[in-house]
Each structure stands twice: as structure tokens, then as C-alpha cells.
Length: 531
Ligand SMILES: [Zn+2]
Image (cartoon, rainbow, N blue to C red):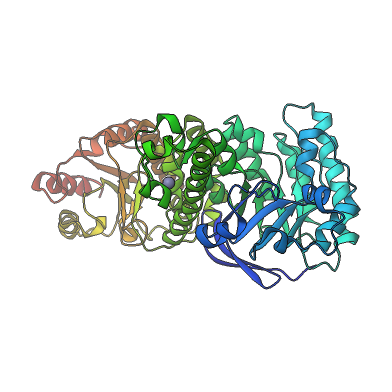
């Protein structure tokens, strides 16, 4: 349809760094676009670009049309005094708030073309919140009908056009909406109306909505999350594959004297310190701000809010480059109980997140607790062990060992000594290590098994998961004999309990040191008895 390019530069989980080009202007994604009301400019658009690094903003074409319909040759970028990319909404938000708008779809499409919008939206019908299912169905159907009707009107336009996805919390309808609009030649997609879900802190619901839309929309097109403006949820939303965000939160929160941080929102009156390194917070104290006239203080809080918002996008992009976006998501999820609940919900989709991730980032991995067992590297390891991995041939004895302290495990001097002394070709040596489960000695030098650290003591879920993975491997590759060389730790005790029926109790060796004389003698004796 229109000459858009969207190149991917890097990725982690479903998150991606992309380069979006429209009408000769480029934008790096993921990107946040501040909502700018042309009538009330909290921060002038030119300053948003020059001082805050906003290469894109969003404004409302319906409001502009109401005020400037009669102005000849109105040009949006001139009106806003802004030379970045301007996205325009169509008035759909006003439908959500006021129930209707006094404009037809052909009129608002024509207007968005005429004023030189770069990214434009059809006149969709947002799904509200807490409305009966038949009304939700109506918004989905009506939006799809509007999308079909829009196609001939936007053909040949050099604006990029957004095909909105509706359905609210009804995931089957979100799926239907995403699939149907995804088949139409739109440039981008956007998930509509999650604002209320976010305002009510229903982040787990947001995860379900966002993942459903993402899974069923065309992956090669950028996807926008309407109305997501709090920096604490950006990392999770980027991890779910969202590229664009818009919100007026920076200004609306400032009007209530609320100070944004990546860990949540603080009331300005409660601030004894300004825990931020933006220019406002570096040059002012809470006392300085408190004595300013109200409007001036709110303007400065809005500026701080914008700085925090933009800085979080940089943090996220760096995490994508480093391949530790999941760690950032876990960290941000600690800011609110409902965010942690959302992280738990997100783990349901770990297969999808794994598929998006590159296999090798070359950096050591940290595992903190059971949230971390959903990291792509852990999922992938178990898939490979039970899938493409082939156990070394002719092995009839499985020797399972507690993980040594150093990495790679196979470089442990005790292990080297033990293997040399046994000199037994029948043995398949494997380490047991949380969270992976089983680490065959011949894979221990490969990434990521060679570079990881798991926080101890382990929690119950991690022990369960680890031992379950070991059990699955033992089931897939039955051995004539299984020996456990175990240390005295909770993982080992749980392992013993779980594998008890798979391992003869006489084949369990308690050992402090793999290369220790007692351990080696016991193993030697067992191997001899297997003749
Ligand atoms: Zn600040």
C-alpha cells in the first residue's frame, strides 16, 4: 500500500529494535509518543524533539478538525511546529469517552491525508470496559467493517495506516479481530482500549490481551499499544513484542502532581528527595519545586515525567542488545503486586517469548528465583535435550552428579579425576543443576550452560521444575543403571525424593567432593557390580 519500511536491528524475547521509515523520516522503535493536545501544549512539540528526544508524537485529528476545518492548507507539522513523525488518532478515543463523534469515517480519513499526518488511524469503535459481550462483539464487527470500508479510501495514500484490534478482555474476540484485520493491507496494527485495564492495575488481563493480539497479528508489522504511558510497564510490553506506545500520562499525572518513576508513581507532596537524574531533578530540590507557583511546578513535573519515560525506552533497548530483557521485566515487575501477577501470567506464554529470542548473546545468565525458569534459554535447553539432543551411544549407566561450584562443570578437577580413574565407556556423566535440570557433561562447555548463576537457596518451584526436567530425561533415555552422587543440599534431597523410584537406593553416593577418595571408591565398587 504505502512505502513503509520496517527493518529489524536486534531482538530479545518478542521485543525488537527496529527502524521504521515513513515519508523519508526514520524512527527507532520501540518508541514512546507523547500525546500532544494542539490546544494545550504542556511541553512544546519542538522541545519534545530537541530536549527529550521524541522523534514521534501523536495528536488528535478529530480535535484539530473541529478547530481548524476552515483554515486553508493547514499542515500538521507547521501547526505543531514539529518536524518529527506525527501520528494522528481519528476520534475513536472520543467515541469511547463521549459515545459518538460528529464526523464520518470518509471525512476523517480525508482530513488526515489532507493535513499531512504520517501515521493515521481509521475511525474504529473502541471496546469499552465492563460492557456486555454482545456489545463487545458489535465493536469488533463494526471496527472490521470500518477497516474494510477504509481500504479503498486509503489506497495510494503515502500516510501509514493503522488497523486497530478490538475485543477487550474477550480473548477469542481479540484473536478474531487480530486475524481478520491482519489479513487486510494495513501498515501497522494497534491494540485498542487497554487504558482502563491499566488504570485499574489489571496487568494480568493486559498480558492476556496483548499476547493474544500479538500472536495473531502479522509479526512483520509494527504493533502499537494504545494508551500505555506508565514507564513501569514498558519493559513487559516490549517483551511481548509491542513497538509503539502513546500516552498523555506524563502531563495528566503532572496535573495531579504525581511524579513518575520506573517503580511506580509517587505523590509530589510525599517527596523528600528527587530520585532521578534528569535535568529538572538534578537542579532542583523538592523544596525548590514546592515554593513555585502551581502551574510552573506541574510543568516541571511533566518534564521530569517525560524524561523518565524516554530514559526507560533507552534502558529497554540496551537490555535487548545485551539479551537480558527478561531480567529487566522481572526487576520492573517488583514495582507493584499486580505487575508481579502479570509476570506470572506472562510465564504462560514463555514458548512464544522463547521463539523470538536469539540463541546466543554471549553473556552469562542470572537466575534469581522461579520467575527465571521461564527464560528462553531454560525452555530451549529442555526442548533440545528431549528433542534434537542424542545421548552418546552405547551408554548403559547414567551417573548423575550434583553441580560443582565452578563453570563449566566439566572443567571441575574432581570430575576430571573421577572420570579418568573410572575409565568406563559405559557411563553417561550428567550434572544436575537448577534451573536447567540435567546438564550432560559433554554439553557443559556450551552456552548458556557454561555461563550462568542461580541464586541459592532454591525455592520450591525451582526445585520442582529442575527435578521434573531430570525425570523427563531419564524417561526418554532409560539406562540399565542410574547412580546419584549427591551433596547434602535441598535440591539434592528433593531430587532424591522425586527420583527415588527411578534409582535404586544402593546406587546413591553421598559426597562432598567429586574427586574425593571415598566417592571414587564407592563409584568404582558400584560400576564393578554392574558387570
Ligand atoms: Zn527527574
